[in-house]
Image (cartoon, rainbow, N blue to C red; front, side, top):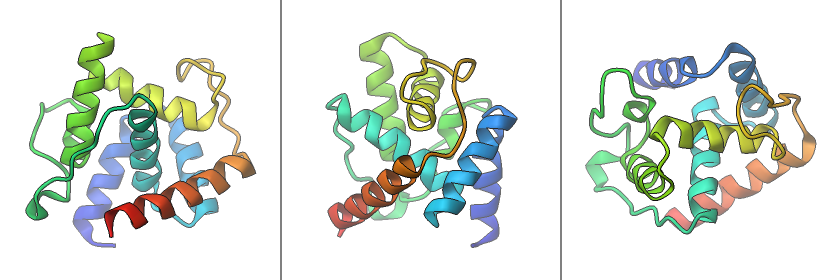
Length: 142
């Protein structure tokens, strides 16, 4: 993993409460994925289920997108996810950061509505789902 990737991972994860960070890292380890990939997959799935189309970025914009704001988690996400989050947030009248929280919460505990009531234990079926969804996303990209 390159230094820029480590910086992005650390910065992206730093937006989450410590117990959520630990859970994301545990899911990443169990699923043999990078922690930021777990976050990306959770967001992509939420947007997909909401019928938000993720349009591929240009070949030179596959990494983190354009700066959205100094304090925004969106700054550290790929441009297609940024656009999808912004669309969902506008339609639902939520702040974009809440869309990210909603996506991660749903991955960690489908019955929770926020980080406060989220159970963060690693569930085997969720690990399996992550691996399968990751493979599906890779096949779509190919």
